[in-house]
Image 1 (spheres, rainbow, N blue to C red):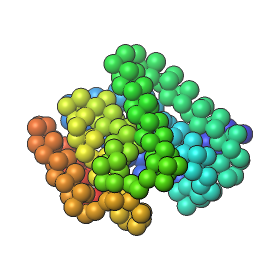
Image 2: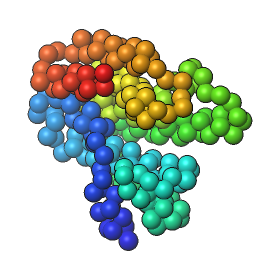
Image 3: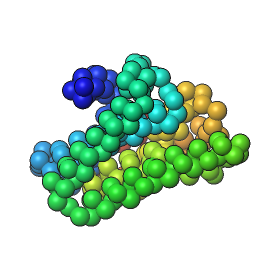
Length: 221
C-alpha cells in the first residue's frame, strides 16, 4: 500500500521549491557542497517533511483535492493518510540522524513545532470566529510556510536564513493573491517581502547560485 501511495503522491510532486532552496543556498557556499550526500539527503528530508505536512493538512482541513488530483485522505481515508504522514516524518528523522548534525536536527525540530503552532493558531481563529487581520495573517504565514523555507535556506547556508523567511512569506502571499483567498493580503505586502528578500541576497557573494535565488524571487513579482 505504501508503495502505491508513494508512487501516486510523487507523480504530482509540486514545484520542489524547498529542496531547491536548500541546494541553491548550499551552492552559494561552494559548488561542491551541492552534490555531497549529506546535502542531498537533507534536501530529500525537507521535501518529505513538506509532503508529510500536506497529507496531514488535508485531513485537518477535510480537503479532497491536492495538486489537481484526489488527496490521499480522500482516496485512502483519514487513517491511512495520518499514518502515511507519520511514515514520512519517520524517514525525515532517519535522514536527519544519518546527516549527524545536531544543530540541523534541533533547527528542524523547532521548525516542525512552529508549523504545528501556525496550523493551530489558524484553527483557533476560525473556531473563535475571529477575523484574520494583517498581523495575525503574517504570523500564521511565518509559522506555516516561511519557517520551513527559512530552515531549508539555513541548512544550505546559515547566512540565508532571513532570506528564506522573506521568500517564504512572499511565496505564500503570491499564492493567496493568485487564488483570490479571503485573506488580508495585498500586492503591497508582497512587494515589501520581495524587496526584503533581495536586500538579504546583497550580502551573499556573486555566483550562479545567488543569481538563481534572485530569479526565484523575481518570478513572484
